Amino acid sequence: MSDNDQHLQTVAEILLNAQQLVVSTGAGISKESGIPTFRDAHDGLWAQYDPQDLATPRAFIKDPKLVWDWYEYRRDLMKNAQPNAGHHALVQMEEYLPNMVIVTQNIDGFHHLAGSSDIICLHGSIHRNKCFGDCQGHPTYIDINTLAWDKSSGPPLCPYCQKAYVRPDVVWFEESLDSALINRAYAVSAQADVMLVVGTSGVVFPAAQLPIITRQNGGIIIEINPNLTQVLALAHRRLEGPSGEILPRILDHMRKLKQA
Ligand code: BV8
Image (cartoon, rainbow, N blue to C red; front, side, top):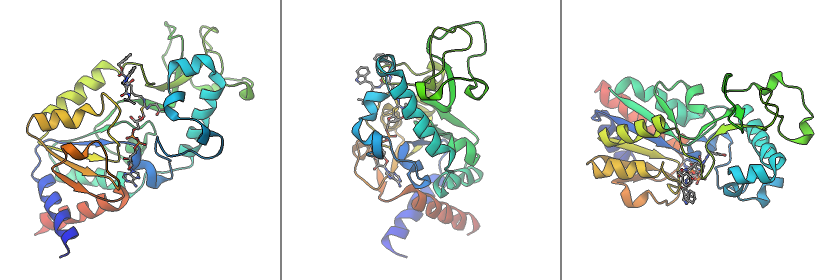
């Protein structure tokens, strides 16, 4: 068995012994679905912008069309993409583990699409839209497919208040996360005896706090990433490479260990 295989088998053993596994995922797990990561240089028009300058309320107020078109471009990418072998491996791992929660920073909905059972989506969903003015007295989410507007002008007006624009139901920088979601993420991270950190640069808070919490409570941190990240200092073990390859190989070892 190669070193690498030995390492994967050891990780598989650690996961099989986990009483509470948390899998914290970032944009990297969707890279092999063809979705650029948050900090990849986007193609064409978007290569000139820093996503961090577009994903804020101020950017939307300043130029609603620019921000809206950026999300329409990303929605298009995601509409034509599918979960990859990494997402599917996480679904199949569930049958070997008593408790497994996925906490994702991603807004693409791929963990749901793949069939994972317990997912905390910290930053919302690009597939949902709501009123920027947060007007009340009606369902929160607005189905833009039911609206008629000049799409070349940018976002539609909220059909309820007719004052504010419709915006994506995602958490922008300088916006607070849903307290129930982040509090549950903190709680499961504190209880986790193992956390698998997959495809995140680990720079955005409060998501980046989760492996710190697990480690502070004595949990084991295992990172999967082709590159070095802020998570490195926290990781007890690191598997270098694309998650779409590594996660299915870990699953294979889990299966073999269970059959032995
Ligand atoms: C908050 C949704 C309280 C939108 C996102 C000053 C003022 C205000 C706030 C702050 C401030 N300074 C700091 C903050 C806090 C701020 C923050 O953390 N900033 C950072 C930049 C320092 N956080 C916030 O603002 C949060 N809210 O703090 O509220 C508050 C309230 C009011 C005022 C003050 C504070 C909200 C953060 C959420 C922002 N929304 N997304 C959208 O997507 O459009 S963040 C977005 O970026 C993602 O969701 C994700 O969280 C992050 C990107 O990170 P990654 O997923 O890690 O992606 P990245 O591209 O960085 O890395 C990809 C990785 O994949 C790489 O490591 C790569 O090597 C790897 N990879 C590549 N290929 C593969 C792979 N891995 C595996 N397999 C492969 N094949």
